[in-house]
Image (cartoon, rainbow, N blue to C red; front, side, top):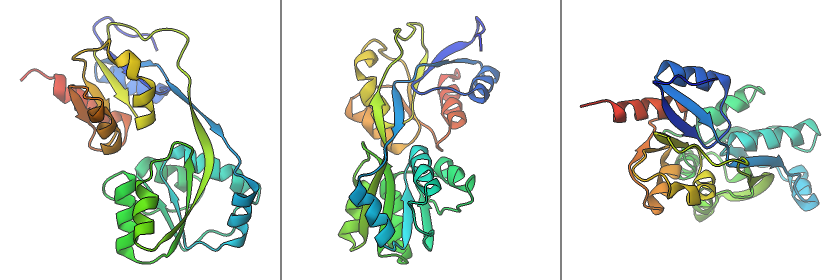
Length: 240
């Protein structure tokens, strides 16, 4: 979608959708797509496939939409047994992807792996969990569960690959949106060119990744969505 001259340019570090671009336009922004990562389905090793068939986990856990998509490929091949008594998702977006394939998931109030693990532990309903995840998964979920005597079987169903567009990002950018710690790492070299440009994190985990790089000013959306990120940015930029 072509931008208007009076709109502020906002860089998205993932592929934008038409709906997001229209939303941004209504809010006075021109959303520029500059994906720095791509994702590939990865079929688990044979022994991991066998562990799915042989074990009877009491719960499944998903910490990303890509984890759901990778799981679905296995499920469609008949490689995943009948669903367990509980299904957990790290947040609304991931839960929505599960709902689209008729799986209802429980989510924590805070959208990160630590909060998800805490919820599973507090509910006290399961002692074994299968986590469908990517190769760059963070370890908060599995570490906390194992510390509380809940076994975790991590099934890697996709891999994250750094692959930036063949062109440099535009210079006159008023803000940058980050959707994952992996995107922060992939964009770290370019970030030095954007001093004092607001960086917007989709949630606390991504926010922490930016803090570790000491990048400021830093905003954090109050929920995991592009709309919430843009609202946080608009409030920040609004004259006092």
